[in-house]
Image 1 (tube, rainbow, N blue to C red):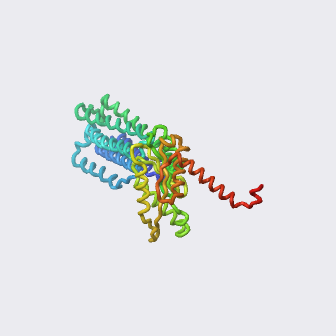
Image 2: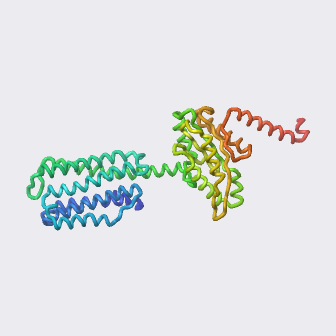
Image 3: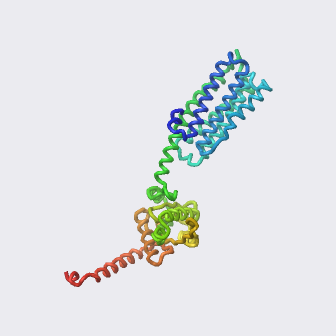
Length: 387
């Protein structure tokens, strides 16, 4: 763990967990030298164990991006030592000492298990569930220790506990320490891989899914999508004019604000991604909603919003074309082509509008292209026409 931390000092979780294991070693050494250190050694050992568990807790909080007040490392052990100094019963019997440690360990282990399961993105990590199980099992075992020390205390010989259940407990400590050491290292590796994957699938400018990630998600959902599921392609109208009038920095700012505005206007089930430039896409996996109405609300919201760039008001509109799975099929290429065709016609018909794809649009597009070819042909010199 120290090696992992040394390779990246920004990985605070590894630093805390390294400290936890070091504190554990110190506690074991103190317990071993109990006869030399005097009768207060068990209390000192428990204080160090508390510090080790605070470090484990701080590590899991850091793993979830949260901070832990440093004062906890001193307050909790300090409070215990103060109580132990005034109430020797807390440590003078090994059974009582084991119970006090176990009470603290149970609370921390369950808290850490909860942190792993509920942390943002943690459920995607392969080691998250196994690590949480290890912690829960550890909490259960320490709970059993509390029960035995209260109702079936181990006989004490030369200051040490002698009982079969205590030996099993010591064995569990060994396995738990080993499993947690491995689990935490793997968790760090899993999180690093997760961050690299997210970075590779996120548009750097807007923070939403890039084209690669968006297409990947749709291809995963399409086979099981409802018949009314739909793909929408949207394009910012006259985006070049924004760059020409205000500069490319303003264009980037507009894209960021536009992406944020659209994202907050969409239902939570919708997928939103940037295809490139000023072109974005939305996929609605459900087939019950009126996608045309939702998209028109998005269009209207964008058209009515004044975007700010260094105090200058920037306004623009968007053109949207969308196609349903029922009309265009469940193959991404055909669905994309259909939505793109509808978006192209929305721009041609005056922009700032939403058009649903219909098969007849293909014929219209072909006829438009044919008319354009005839017009170009009519401009050619007569001699070339003759040839």
